[in-house]
Length: 114
Length: 110
Image (cartoon, rainbow over all chains, first blue to last red; front, side):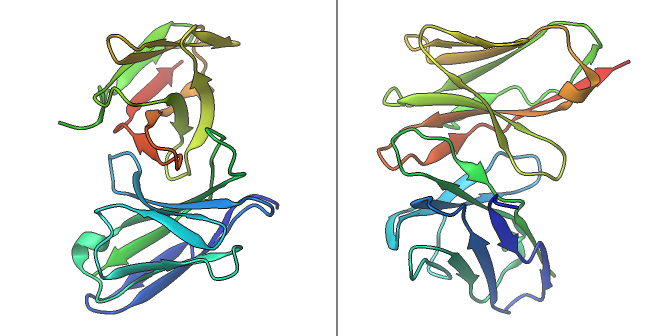
């Protein structure tokens, strides 16, 4: 499968714990995006990378959230001291990096914070 | 006010019907426009881009009115497989970050 992959697909954690998600983009895609989607809502932009550089962060990305893309390939999203409000689907997308090009989404990581 | 607004539906239509979805966006600096489709518990997938001149892809027609900041999607001859949530999406910045509407749910019934 050459699409965007995400791991894990599901994560259940207790409030206060730290969690880390991984995203593997389509190879040769320079841009990588993270979005968050809650039930009944559309995805909301969190952050994006051009190669290894993090170029934009949403105001939704509190200081408990950190994202990395150390070698310009896979990316990780870490949430520290999780809160119940963090429960959502975390979606990763990638694109070639050409202006207005299509973003391909991964299957998402569903986080439940108890 | 949300940046991209859609009627959440659901729209319940019989097979073969024509159905239209509308969407408004608030940022006049929006530069590109899309419709994505999302099946239940799946990731969004690009349905079609929306151009100022309007564009058609089979049974699907998308239109953009920049003056009114309004986007539409028309589905003709609805199929059961068209049942999904349709997300209106705009792109504002140079970084290609997408802003999604809340989605419109379509249910096509036999």
